[in-house]
Image (cartoon, rainbow, N blue to C red; front, side, top):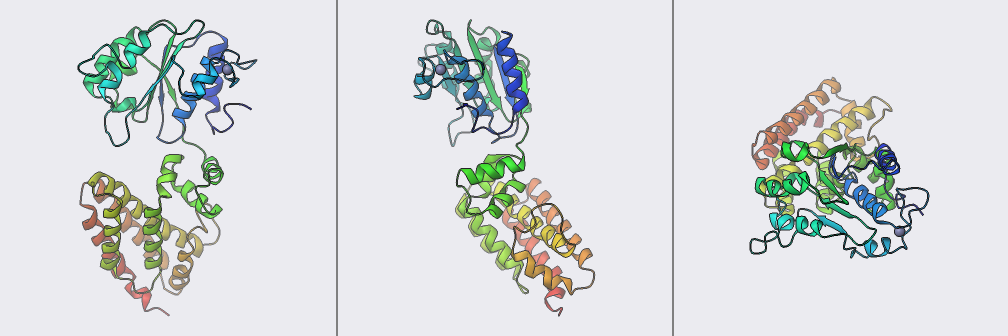
Length: 358
Ligand SMILES: [Zn+2]
């Protein structure tokens, strides 16, 4: 079985590496750039295994899974495969991972390990994940290795934010851009990995994921799902309390995290869900269209009520506009609870006349 079977997309990049290996024209340093959660790291690992495999067969991008290169690689103990990344919960790639701790600077860490000779007939392959989280000191100490990589070493840097990398780092790597995955790929990955209970759920998460499996997974976190269904059940009620809803949502957010930056991300999701609710209502009222239609059942009863209201199109347009404004308020650092209060109170007022429509 191919080592690439479980990885979606990125066919062009695969072909590029296949040709480079066949022509013995591999660079010593690559920089993989693209949105988070689309498989850059998985790609790099597969590439690394194929480079370390002693018996790849006819396709240089494959790996046998059995040889003295593959076995230790798969067991996570190949001495020539090095991988570092930003630890969970940290914001910066620790310099100690690159050049060693303060006491043992230069005597351990990625740069040191890379300088050791590979096993006979092998080569060193190093993955530096989250390269865009390297601080300046860290990046500068890594630069020397990047400028003069040891012979038979290949470095793969991975980043989602190209602008956050020092120009000196960028300019020394061959840039490989990765695109977001197709929605259909995200959908089938979610179903395949049992991350959703229904196809509709997979469709909803993939439609909002922007082609990132990481974002799709975030959308499926139980806490966020709970807030989404609370939001939809309230919005579809004829007489919902705007401030009551925003209070419940704010409480829910603080259970997810007490950190403001995280609350902003999730607050933006609630706003996005609200927009999707109104957009879906529009689609229901205007007949079939492409999009996430059918994934918000609550929008149907809302649409039925709205259908009796004159100028419902105009009303929906203005509801969507107000909700988009709220998103830009969060971008401008207005507090999340304040933004939600003002948004849902406003929506509630705008929807009052609909509640009395028969
Ligand atoms: Zn092998």
